[in-house]
Image 1 (cartoon, rainbow, N blue to C red):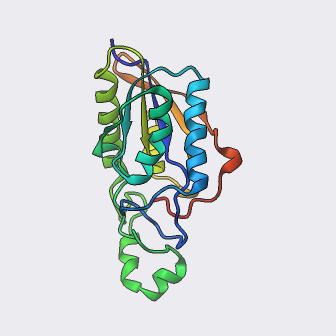
Image 2: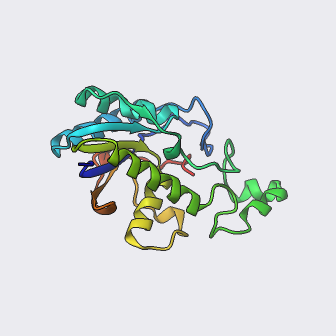
Length: 211
């Protein structure tokens, strides 16, 4: 019998004083506030009665650190999975503003198709790898639930795919706060979104580094 639910947890706030888009760049770690956020997410899972049979984590530092309180509370060993990593983005390491583009006109080319999007990994690709990772994780256990610590865009793409919405969207309208938990029921090989929780709402700030 596979897992009954898969819970997608976004990482906590990142130490990013330069306000750059950090993407897949290494060494971007949680801020002190982000560590508190991660702890809030772990406690929320416990209070909700979640019984993780597996903990799967994106290999980036910020997600591994966000998974630590979950691993401690549930005595779980994290499994790294490249398929739930942040999408690649052409603007990694830059502050993405209108001024940035005006000063570097060659960057305009990468903005030619926001529906794909042309500046990084396609939305379709993100959905395909996330859904495979979620299904594989759910099918790899004998009952219980799966917790996956990942990133904003991958979580939002799963939400839109499962709900039947168009993948192209306005990034400023995403419902996926730092350390939020988006939960899906898994039955007969299909996923259905059942809840969204924002346990770190009181600690949240604007994340300038998300893809």
